[in-house]
Image 1 (spheres, rainbow, N blue to C red):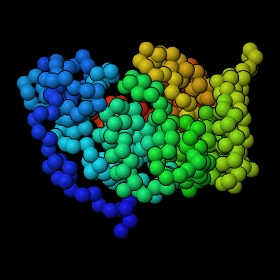
Image 2 (cartoon, helix red, strand yellow):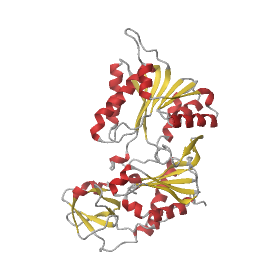
Image 3 (cartoon, rainbow, N blue to C red):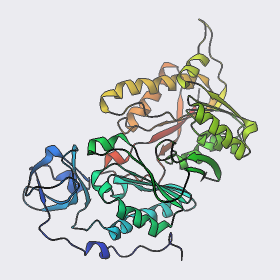
Image 4 (spheres, rainbow, N blue to C red):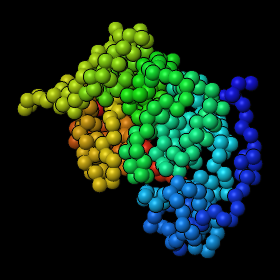
Length: 419
């Protein structure tokens, strides 16, 4: 039996290792416990009533409500707005055995819902009850991203657990996210174990994508659309396809493999376009693909511009919109919605009657209803009627815990242009 399929040991091996009552205690203000009891792992500084003793940042503490009832155990950090990140509702020891237990449980979820995937997210922070820790698997290389002080201090235990479970060729760190500065941490990148130059060919649904794990986006590439690449491609056969914000060609190359007559891929990054061209050749799909380095907003505007009393001639049977996030906070949501409406409006003008628009939003702050409204508003302004034919979410390796709203961020729709 290989290590990936080895069953996890009973949780009793972890949770029976209790810690004594000398653990520093954080008491919450009255009325602040309900969200924690429901399963959310964050305790904000303004929810804390007091600490029973002086506590160093990164130390383990137990959290109790104002009536001294235990709510859980987690990491304390006075420098962060998130004062405590809970790990468990019980007293635990966050040692190598604990992390092995949690990571094996997370891996079992991926094996259940993505049994054929060889590259996927193994640990998705709060989604897998390991706040501040992301682990992505790219074939035989793992990439770790740590955004919380408590996790950073246990990095040795995390790496040891990952080596035990996966025996990877290398474990790399890409802890360069902006969130680290709010935890009092500096960026940290490099090789944690093994050897790798960062260059790797990643298999997604049977297509190969070259990826740079050192310089690529996030931990190398976006894995959260893996299932959607395949799902959207069903609308491509025999048609002309426009893939906007194409990055490494995920949607476009899946569409080409599905039998699209022609696929045009647009991205403002020259490096991304060059990589997507190489990916097309690697997969034998270059004959049906055209690539352009361009600002997508400018391209859409130029290709929908007409003189008075003229109209845009629709050219595409499938248009895919997968832009980067238009907002990082709630204050900029109105601007983001205007941006989404703008690209929806212009895409609808270029879409043939009977064609499909697949559109995505990766901002947590723009909810599903607001995002859909931006499209329906564009349809109203262009006097088009749409039929919703599919609804999308992030791939199963990015699990959604409804009681932790921050775990749900990616949403998408496929709409058919009826007239």
